[in-house]
Image (cartoon, rainbow, N blue to C red; front, side, top):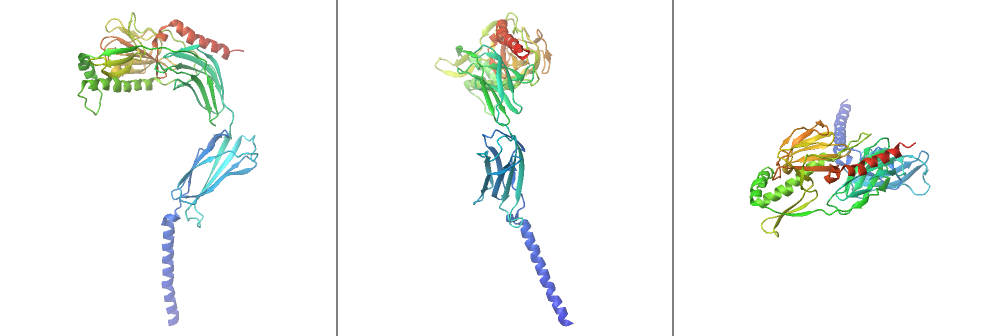
Length: 460
């Protein structure tokens, strides 16, 4: 009896030790970095459009390190391994480029494919096999380029001016559609029927070279580029040299510089001039660009504007596109530069300013050097701007009618005398207001282009 009790007492400690070692081992397995249980990550869109020319990009990663991967494509009948790899050294991420297999490995007529990516990491979890991730992607094969045709367009465009184009574009997987012109991107608005679009295009006045192309890109990155056949009319803009007087520096410039909200205190009057005429100006113009770059996505049935005539009996006091050089003392001592991107008109003091066309007020506040400045959206990306006002009589969001008084002329902002700084913008790009003052120009370059387009669109 004693021997049996001794044997039982010996087994008990051994069992406890084994159980303890088991707990220690289990704890180690569950906490040791080499037994981590986080699966590798596979990053890619779930639905992919593929033109079979460009590779599909897939990113794989793991917190501890990648071990191997395999990529298989199935066309509904056959499966083909298109890529696989092993990592001899620790690597936590890898960008994979999947190319369409050459030859007749897959059905060339298949329009849908299934892409399966499997990735294993270097963890010792899962009986030393590692963690494994599998991701299946649906691939739509599309190697057909979008269809684009110019329907009608303005015959010519002047440097600093505007033109109109109406075109047709179609693709069941269309992703991007825009006009690249003068280094700028212009959006098009749907016009009349499905697959037809219209857009005003601007040639920036400070660029000598210009070309315009309609760009259509589908989701598979098939691309079509079509030239718009504008006849180009270069134009030379005026260059002015302006002597800066102390009264100007100590007056308007000092006043505006105090509102620059700069962290740097400016003591030198010429530094204040540059802060206002260059830094503040660019900031104010960037605000104008952001406000006026938008265009509606709703279908446009009709768009017609009358010539702009914002100030009755207004006389020109400054032209659009002038490059201004400011000098202090001698002409050789140039201290600042700027461009004048509007057309200045003056009549009587605090004269009423009228909008010539219907529109929506998109801004009606003070804007630095432009002073009190209402802006109106007339549709199709065309905006009008009224600077240096003494009083604004509308508010943002108001719908205004042609002939309505919206403000009064003044000398707010960087203005020395009572006048109106009038601007026209096309999707954020300042253009020549004189074109929009001219009823004949509007008829030739806008109205007639729409009429010609309508004849094509509605032809039976």
